[in-house]
Length: 202
Ligand code: HEC
Image: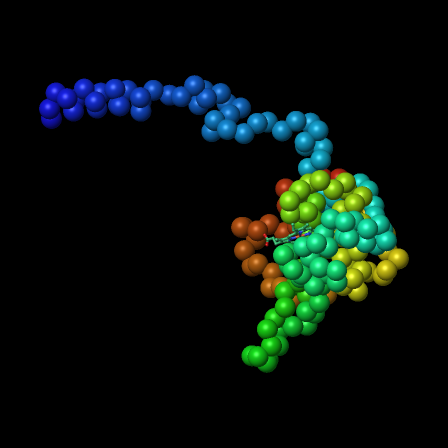
């Protein structure tokens, strides 16, 4: 090894061995991210199919139509038929069929097993360009509108934590339960146990 190489390698080794300042801070072990504020945590929700974890609030199909027209229609279409965004309704019964020429049509209506997932998805990620910008009431309302257009809830429905969790989705039983309880604990054993059960407050 030449003298020149040694001169370069030694400082390089010293840089590698020295610990960066942030590694000493237990609140930031990876050197990025911030601790969520109480306000951020209060706005966070992670609902389960039985309604645990759903926030307070409610919204009607009528209010949801207004939210949809203003915030969703441009991408999901006037009749929820899709466009830039996915088609949201229709396709019921197309997932399992014996006709190779008939494509399965996967939508909220035909595929999603739980209505609570729809609330969760919209709240976290829609509208696409401004996720988490809707109030909980608006999310309940637009969820009700989508479910009403899918003929899953009546046109005069109002949804809240309790009524949303009670909605029976058409493809609810179209899934094979995962037979590995060690990997996927049952809903009853999930870490959400401590969450207040808004849907069935006993
Ligand atoms: C700027 C366009 C845009 C707007 C506005 C928008 N979406 Fe979306 N949406 C998308 C796109 C793109 C996807 C697909 C995202 C993906 O697959 O990662 C999507 C996916 C979805 C899905 C999941 C569909 C599925 O079957 O996987 C739902 C539900 C949904 N949007 C509802 C809404 C609602 C409700 C609103 C209004 C509050 C809204 N979106 C506004 C573009 C949009």
